[in-house]
Image (cartoon, rainbow, N blue to C red; front, top):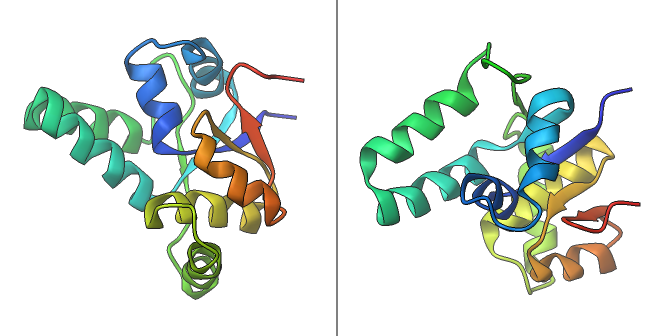
Length: 139
């Protein structure tokens, strides 16, 4: 079975900057079953645009949205529907996570799989029963 995870912005930015844990994200993007929300991709895009410019952000956007990614599997996109928005709102209401991170946690909850991150704010999500797979701590 494929390695199914929801990627948050932290995981993708770790991969793109080749920070510790990047190879784990690379493996998911190459052979796993990566899921994301457009909210989290938007978070990646605005951070990249601030730091590297609109062209770099656009290249990453196009690559991740492609149905056929050279050297990797396509990212799967969870619909932003009533179920996900309510789940994200409930998670956000508990405090401790940004609204975008609440969408990643909500997607992991809806899909019944872990969110892959190194962002320590996701400890709040763990306390709420969301599965979290911490970069660099693979079991």
